[in-house]
Image (cartoon, rainbow, N blue to C red; front, side, top):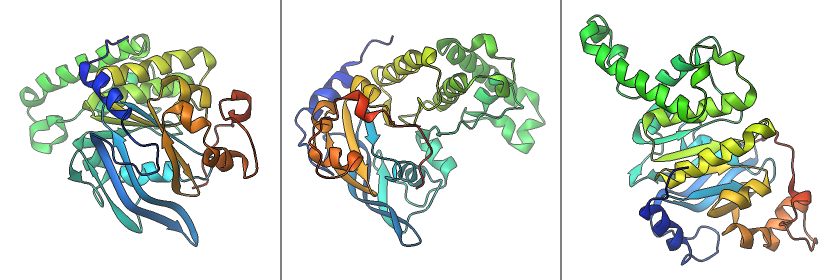
Length: 298
């Protein structure tokens, strides 16, 4: 496990001064979004008035299926375009910026359904995630001396990450031969090849064998403790309470609650979002919150 950096401890402490209200301003936000709207026909999939993500902590984005969580991820990372709204990452406006540029700026994401290239090896998949590859240029590709040193650096970094994620023995195997949990690990490891400042994980535990769950949890905590900001979507409330520093709740495209995990689970607006109105229920009861990890409709 990585040793927590002082900046991480300070960021967590700073959250203790933040009001537990939707759209609250954070002391040191790495991602800020305001007025973001996305409609499909007459359905408002996303209608976020304001949302900020604190730097150097783990933030969970939760809500019932169809709340707009994945759509919000898609908008922030350039995989979809909004009807309205602005957002910035580390002070740089990103609205309308292509997904590749977003990634190069330091904000990367994983997907509900893993995107590993099945007919390439695990190591080749890892190499794809690296920045600044001179061999991608037609002219430098013709001169091995110009790209071989960088290729060696990339390979060494890839193998180091695969060892960290306990996938080094699979380096020469086709990615398509990996189990669902191993593919999740590969996607997370590949995301780190670009040294991101913010990693956005879309349902990292969906379809994962219980034997690998603790490993994934440990890696997410390690990301934070080594100074990487984490924003993740998850339905498993036990996991949310266990690893998140802050929780944002979406329902019907809107942010309806924010706060520390314990406070959010007892928030009546959150209970209503999951179970409907007129319920006097504490979401701290895991039995009530175990939802199937299915793909969102929006």
